[in-house]
Picture 1 (cartoon, helix red, strand yellow):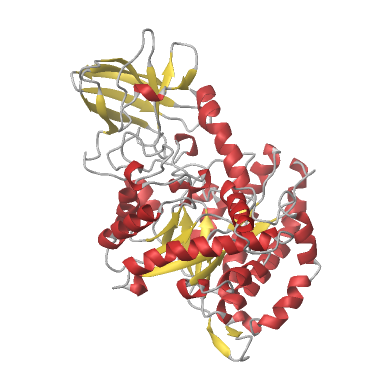
Picture 2 (cartoon, rainbow, N blue to C red; picture 1 turned 180 degrees about the horizontal axis):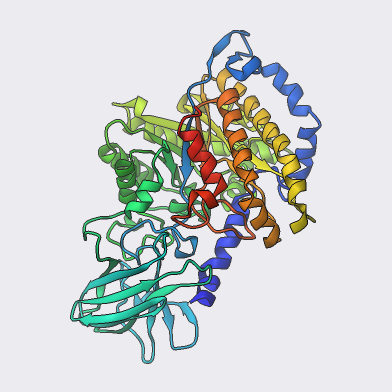
Amino acid sequence: MRDADAGRGGDRKRRKIAARRSNGVTPRARPARRKLLTLGIVAAATAAIGAASPGGKRLLNRDTQQPVGPAVPTDIGINLFGIAPYNRQQVFTNLIAQSEWFASQGAGWTALPHDQVDARGWVRFLRAGQFAPRPLVLPPAPFITLAVRCTFAGRGRLSAGGVARLVAERPSSVDIMLTSEGRADEGGWIQLEQTDPADPLRDVDCRDRALPQDQLFHPAFVASLRGFSAVRFLDWQRVNDNPVSIWETRTLPDASSQAGPGGVAVEHMVALANEASVDPWFIMPYNAEEDYIARFARYVHANLAPGRTAYVELGNEIWNDMFAAARQAREEGLAAGLAPKDDPFRAQMRRYAQKSRAALRIWTGVFADRPTRLVRVISTQNVYPDLAEMVFDYEDTARWTDALATAPYITLDLNGRGAGDVDWVYSRLDAAVDETIDFAARNKAIAARHGKRFITYEGGQHLVTRDMALAHRIQRDPRMAAIYTRYLERWRDRIGDRMMLYASTAPIGDYGAWGLTEYAGQPAADAPKLRAVRAFLGGAR
C-alpha cells in the first residue's frame, strides 16, 4: 500500500506542497527581491503610505494623514489540509471517502484505469486476475481497535488488508476490525475481490459501528475546529492543480471519493461551515468558467447558515511563479499588453486584477441582498507590499474588493543546517516573528489607504528542511509554543483582524511541517503549536 501511495499520491503531494509553500521569503523564490526588501527599500516606500502609531492601534491615511481607525478584534481561522489518508485526519465518517480505487494483481498497486469506473467513481468491472484495493483513512487517536461495518449495494465481494482484518461477511455488508497503533508507516484498506458487471458492488460505506449512517463528518474532526472563526478550503478544492472548472463535471456529494481531481463537493464544504459554526473561505479556480463561479456562489448564498459570512478570492498566490496559474497570468497579461514587455510582473498582477474583478463581481451580484455576509479578497505577497498597490490601482479593482490578504510566515533559511542547530534556529525566531509582522503592518497601511480590511490567507511557521532529524526537533521543541504565542500576540497588538493559520493536521515531511498537529487526536502536550493556539483562543485576545 505504501509504495502505491507514494507513487500515485505521496511524491506528487510533496512536489505540489513544496511548491505552494513558497511565499517569497525562502531562497527558492525571488532571492534578489528579498535582498532589496531587507535592505530597506520597502521601508522607505512605507513611510510615504503611512504607518501604525505606537502600539499599532491606529493607521494614517497617506493622503489626509488622519487616523483611519483602530485595529479590530483578532480572531483565528485555520486552513484545512488535504484530505488524503496519509495526512492522518479523518474528516468523513465514511472511511473510504478520502481515497480512491487502485488496481492490483498481487504485486504492488497502480492507478485503476478510468474505463473501469463509472461516473460516480464505482468500479464497473474487474479484469481477469485483478483486484481493486482502496485505502481506509485511519481514525484519530487515542489508537484503539475499532469495529467497522462496510455496507454496500450490488453484488460482489470485499476483503481487507493491512491493519484492517475481515471478521464477518454478509450479502450486503462486511465487518472489519481496524487496529491502529499510530505508526507512520501503517495503513489499512479494503479490497474489491469480485464484482458483477451487471450489478456492480457500489455505494460502499465503511464506518465505526457506533456512528449513525446519516452522520457526514467525524465528530472528532468537527470538535477540532472549536474556537476557530473560519476555515479556508484551498487544499480541499485542489486549486493549485489549476483545473478548468466546469459546473457539470464538479465533484458531487454522492461521489465515491471526495479526494479526486475535482476536490471536495461544495455541498460538503457548506455543510461543514454550518455544522462547525465557522465562516467558509472559498477559492475560485483561476480557470473556472463564469457559469461555475455563478452557480457556486448561488449554492453558497442559498445554503450557508444565517449569521455566517462567506470569504472568496480568485486563485491561490497568483503572484507566485511556482504555480501554473501565476505563469498563465503572466503570459496572458503580456499577450494583452497590460504592461510593457520589460515589466512582466506588472502584467501578471494586472491580469490577476482583471480576473479577480470579474469573479468578485459575480459574487457581488449573487449576494446583493446581503452584502455584509460576503468578504471579497485580493491576496498578495507579504514581503512585497508594492503588489497590493499594483492590484488596487488597476482600473476599478478596489471597488470590488473588501479585504487585502497576505501570508506573513515565520521563516528562516535552513540550508546547510543539521540536527545540532536547533538552538541556532530558536535564537533567531523571535526576530523572524517581528520581521514578518513589520511587513504585515506595511500591507495593512496600504489596505487602510484604500479603505479595506487587512487579513491573512495563511500564516504560521515556514521552517522547511530536508534534514528530517532537524525538522522533528524544531517542530516538537517546547519553545515552538512560545514562538506561536509571540506571533499571535504581535499580530493582535499591531495588526488585528483575522489570522488564517496554515494548517490543520499534517505529518512532518521534507516538504514542510504545516500541521498544528501531526495526526488527528495528537495530545496538546505533544503539539506545541496547537497548545499555544488553544491558549491564545482561550483568553489572550
